[in-house]
Image (cartoon, rainbow, N blue to C red):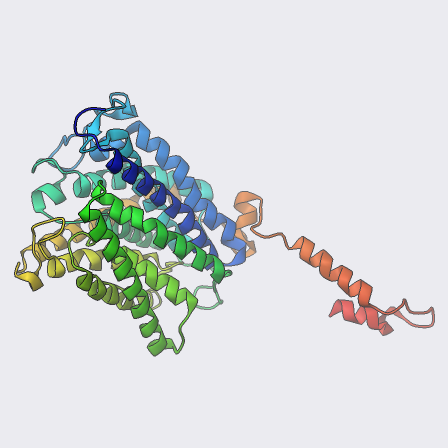
Length: 449
């Protein structure tokens, strides 16, 4: 390997990439448990398909658009790395091979569109969703990743190198981006049948808890891995990730107890995810005490924000807007208040003597990514809706999208029914004599019940 290569840093980034990859199946479980049983399999598939589509597009042109040398005023990378044909095995990005860096960033690209799927659960055609992923990552995620993540001594992405907006691991590029796109698609597809009328409770809270646990675990790779080295900055990001997630969960549960009178497992899982989202952009710029404050604020604000869909009348099925859009925006903005100047950037927030300058830069980043993502997601969604159709029929939605879109069910209830029928038969009294009618038979009555 050439001079400057670090085996320790490379191992750390590769392991972090694997952890981030695990987040997508974790998200599938998290979302899959939150929907009704008739949509569980479809929800899992909507996350998993992102692993296939985005990976192929990343190799073909996504990595080049996101991290190729800037070609137009910080808006987009050039196409010098299309197909990854001109990347050498021993070519470095910092202290790690370019291939290791590319695979780490790929996992960010994979999970971002998967996050959107929760906003349109129960009602989207799988084929239309696959087409949306391909177009959205191409025209939205890849360029936005260039804006936010690509640095080149002042000649990189326009938000990071020209504006000076900070986003260490993707609060704007990933979470705000996905949350706002989810809002646009929810508006394009419209409300689910029975919205505000029928109970739409999670079918498996254990799956939700499992998914949130996998997300929490993988998020250490997401945030600490963004240091791209096994160093003190990674340690700070790791610490703040744990602290903010814990405090957000507590904040959400306190809000839930005051407002609804109970501490729910769904609230604990959602609060943890809200904290993970909020700390993502800020994890390398604030102190652990700041992480406690950020987590509490995100937990409470996201818990409150999810109620807005009922007041404003849009159907965000699994609260993608309330958790990811709001959490990502709040976390990014709080950098402007809580940045210490002693972590991954010398920039200081308002509370550390930096004035309002950094807060203004963060607001520009949040506004630019939010508006761009909403407009492009709405346009792509409308084009798909008008051409191939994005939403399933009302009959399919009511009957269950799993059978219609995948010809499968998440659970096999036929064996349960057969076992119950056998149990009833074995416990029934002897067959009635000819003098009794079928209606008089207690066995028949019991089976009907």
